[in-house]
Image (cartoon, rainbow, N blue to C red; front, side):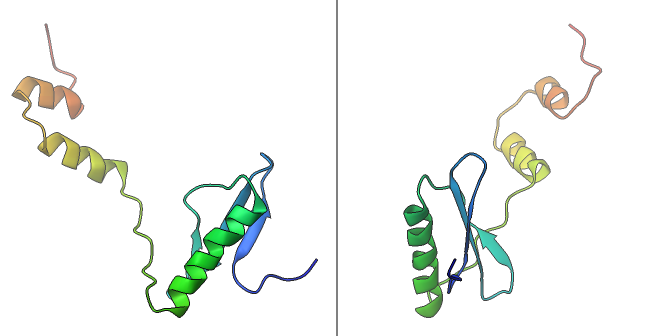
Length: 95
């Protein structure tokens, strides 16, 4: 089997394909989804390669932790104090 020039494609047990590549930051980056065909995975990799060669590549953003997401969600809501305590894990709520 010939070696790929850029990136890596793997066939998953689900019969779908995953794709990844090494960015300018030296880290391996994975496609955000799997692909139904190998051709689709190759197209995604070629787009990433064109971005790298054209100087348009930016590292994908890191996933946000649940704690950060939850805090942002809670602070964006107009909650009553009792509801906010309950959502934050306060167990001393009586009815």
